[in-house]
Amino acid sequence: MKMFPVCVFVCAVMILTHAAGDYFLPEGRTATNQTVKRHLAKRSSDCPGGWTLLRGRCFLYVPGPMTWAKAEKNCLSMGANLASVHSITEYHGIQHMIMTATHGNQETWIGGSDAQEENAWLWTDGTAFHYSNWCPGEPNNYGRNQHCLQINHSGSKCWDDKGCHEHRPSVCVKKI
Image 1 (tube, rainbow, N blue to C red):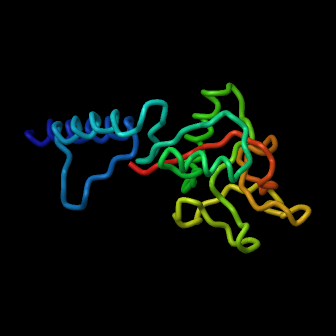
Image 2: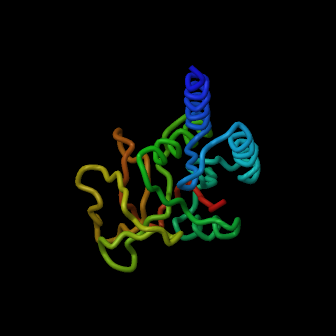
């Protein structure tokens, strides 16, 4: 009978940590009330003011339209890069952040580019480009001049390659 309260406690900790975001303990460690409280307190102060914590990284929506290169330079000035996206959960979090700021789904720059080699997509933050959410038929390099990645394209709110000279809002990301 002593196991029942322990099971209830462990389930509650799992639910609370999941509700607060993704949190994984190193292998072999278990969560206690104290570790969960420390983690939640740390999470609230991890990102600078105005930035949003998503899956262990800080994101910032920048509403001012800029070219892709100027948007990356702007992110660099804040110790960040244009955002890389590594899962559908992260993508939906970014979309929610944009929707909250603009009450819409504006086409927005993130940090993907194939400017160095056609169809060899890279993230400016150096992380691996494994996840994508391209619109049907994209990337198509229309006019042989589309080398930068915008999100929230078309009614499907998917990804599109676009001319880097176009002006768009942007999303920056920085590591914690």
